[in-house]
Image (tube, rainbow, N blue to C red; front, side, top):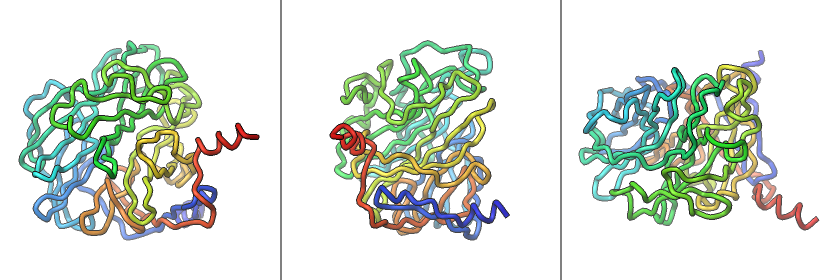
Length: 349
C-alpha cells in the first residue's frame, strides 16, 4: 500500500514555479548495468547509450523505448581504469567528446575518484583518452567510513550551456574540510574541448578561479554530515538536463542518509534558469521517497533528438538501468525563486 502511494504521489516544488510528477508506466530496462549516470546521444539515426560498471558498454537501437543491442567499446589505453563514462557531447562535425569518473585505490578498499576526458571519431565505438581534467588537491582520508571513498571528485554530469560558451561540470566533492564537501561546479570554455587539460576552472567563492587539478571549491549544495563519517547525510550524483517545456535546467540528485553503507535516502529535484550561475538553483525538493528510490536517477527525453541532456514535458525517469515511471513537468502559479534570491530577501529583512 505504501509503495502504491509513493508511485502516484505528486511532490510539487510549489514555491519555485514548476513541479514534477512521477507516473507509473510500462517498464523500460537498459541491457547493461548502470553504476553511474548513463549518457545518451544519437548517431546515424540510432540512439546510443553508455552504461558503466568499471568499464563501459555501448547499447544502440531506434530509441530508448526499443530493444537495444550492446557491445564493448575500445579505449586507446587502460591506464585510467576502472572508469565510468558519465557524460557525452556530440560536435557538429561528428566528433564525440566524453567525460569519465576514474577511481584510484588509495587506502585499501577506499578509492579517490577524479574526472577525465575522452574523444571519439567513430560516434563512440572507440575512444582516445585526453587525460585527467579535475582532481582534488587534498590527500586521501584513510579514516573515512562511508565505505567507498577516501575523498576525490566524481559522480558528475557535464552539460553545455544554451549559448555554447562553456561546458559545466556538476560533481560530488568528497574531499577537504566540511565547508568544501558537497555538490560543486567547474567549467571549461567550449573552444578548449579538444585539449582540455589545464582548461577546467572550479567555482570558488563566487568566481571561476581555482584550477581543475588541485583547486578548491565552494559547494552549491553542502553536505549536512561529512563524507568521512559512517552516518553521512549528503546530496550527490547530480544529473542535469535542459527542459524544453519549462525552458529551465533540471537537476536530479541522490541522497544518502544517515546510516553506514551509503544507504539510499531518496531522490531530489532542483531547477535553475542559468546553468552558469551556481547560486541560482532552487532548494532541492523530494521527488521520490527512500522506500521506492534507487541510485543514479536521470531523465531521458522521448522526442526526436532528445537525450539525457534534453527533454520535454513528458520523459522517462530512470534509476540506474531501469525506468518504471514517466516524469511529467508542469508549471505552478507561484513565480520562480532560488536559494540565492531567498537569501537576498532575508538580508533585506
